[in-house]
Image (cartoon, rainbow, N blue to C red; front, side, top):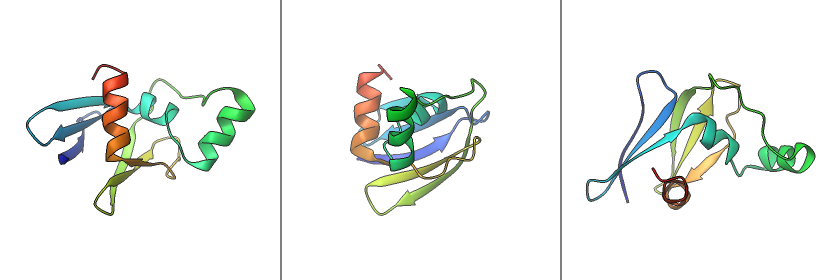
Length: 96
């Protein structure tokens, strides 16, 4: 499904290289706002959205099994796991 994951040199965007040659660019701010972990879901319930600074960056990427990635952000959030299927959904939904 995915050939390669990387962050841009400024770490503000996740680049997903899909099998077959397509590429998606997913901004860190969007990924953080779309996180589905329990902490983020609670924040959405309590505040309506996740507050994100415009200078948010990706500080780490860790493979989770064969089907997802854990993204770490400069705001200290490191709990979000993004299944590759969800990254594809985000890419399609946000036109990336």
